[in-house]
Length: 231
Image (cartoon, rainbow, N blue to C red):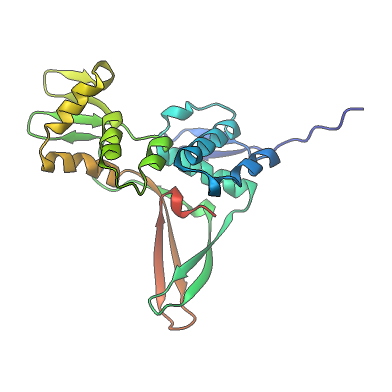
């Protein structure tokens, strides 16, 4: 006699980049076992695990490799909420040296986009660069790196087009060497404009407030980016 099949609950969330509704289910036991290996994985493996878990738990309904990193991060945190717990325990370090145990609810997470942020960067009065948001693999690979070449490669992969009033050059139609030559011809000020696109790109944010039991100080902490939410 065949064993009964269990119904898995489904939920919905709003995708930050597009505003569309996405259905998802929680991790199953076999997927949670994979999740537990992340603490021992290298950067590329972490990115692959996150991407694949998000893909399977959203029923393969998204073009997962094209999603910006903050969409993947947002979905992943909601998967964590419905699979493990909506509450995340964190430690806040007070100025007096006290370590304060506190928590926050994943349902309160927001994706914040700074005012004035744009994916179209004018590098001078005539020429602009249209950028696309990096995916989760790119962000995890570049995070905390001091390798300037990786940063440059990220920028090259993120160029969608170069344009002026008369022409629009699609990046996919150019060779890597041509794009690299173009980027290397930028001044430091112009290159900094491109870097600011990544610095100010949307990110998941949680503000945590707590009072120190030792000195009474009201602490306000801000967590940003997926790396600060791994527990």
